[in-house]
Amino acid sequence: MKTTLSIIKADIGSVGGHIKPSKSLIERVKEYIETQGGGIVIDFYISSTGDDIAILFSHTQGVGSEKIHKLAWDAFLAGTEVAKEQGLYGAGQDLLKDSFSGNVRGMGPAVAEIEFEERPNEPFLMFAADKTDPGAYNLPLFLAFADPMYCAGLILSPSMAKGFTFTIMDVAYTEGDRIIELNAPEELYDIAALLRDNQRFVIESIRSRSTGEIAVAVSTTRLHNIAGKYTGKDDPVMLARVQGAFPATGEVLAPYNIGHYVAGFMRGSHTGPLMPVRLNSAISFFDGPPVVSCAAFCVHNGKLTEPVDAFDHPYWDWVRDNVARKATDMRQQGFSGAAMLPYSELEYGGIVEKLKVLDKRFNVR
Ligand code: F6R
Ligand code: MG
Ligand code: MG
Image (cartoon, rainbow, N blue to C red; front, side, top):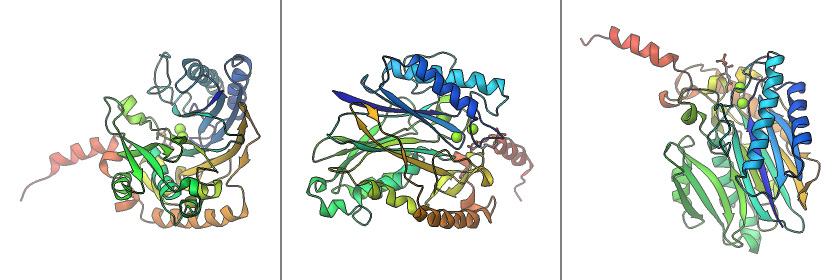
């Protein structure tokens, strides 16, 4: 039996600004899946990260299943009804199309899915980030799957000695999925050359070269490409199988101690450090900082264990303090230089209008 894990995530409204969905909204989504998911879903888990709600499904329908995607879409519609009733901010924000057409990809929600033959014990991690974009996972994944400075298993474990294949997507291309496959370690510099540009090239998936097995899947949506205008950042989700032929849980988590600077933060238009936070955390300082949460599970015959909150540990409190300092340092320079994203990535059109008006007032002396 092959098991599929699908994580589908959307911002469908939140309390007090873009900071956290309401309890009633989350309850409604849960109730919808409990009552409508029979026969389709083996198990599911719901969590929130910032203003986003994520549904993790385990099932046997395979990747891209219309039944699973429709169930998630309809659950989000049911949640949106509650958001409207409660007057939540941004109700239905990420549901960008009026009617469902087979797959939620390209309709607003973020999706990451993997299908695999379960190992006798199958640990995996579910990541969800808010106030940032899919490129936020580029550096941590590169370090966890290709750099022995972070992943000791690359040196110590025979089952990882051949390295990993990275599938990288050009997310600026909108006609279809433009992808490249590169092998670590031989093509490490080529991988790095692409991954440095987090807004253009995004890791879509990673496979083990020893077993051919899928290790990682990342959501690669660009909401801007779908809607043609800003509707919110592309707050990405990710699934990562761990241990054995894959990096250990701690090796995948380790790079999040950097708090590397990513795109997002206030109005999706700034640079801020990625803070690893506890499950179901809200958003606060300057609509940020960009956050990432991680739930660790085992799955057996499609049944999920309870989640363990991977960033709920005293070590990560120390990291959070450091990241808060990095966020403050960057915020001290306001709109200047590196603090605000380049023109092409600004998520609000206001500045375009402003520059058009100012352009007319320039004189050549
Ligand atoms: C970023 C985000 C927020 C909003 C900001 C303004 O992803 O959601 O930073 O951009 O709160 O929101 P609006 O334009 O809805 O008033
Ligand atoms: Mg929002
Ligand atoms: Mg969000």
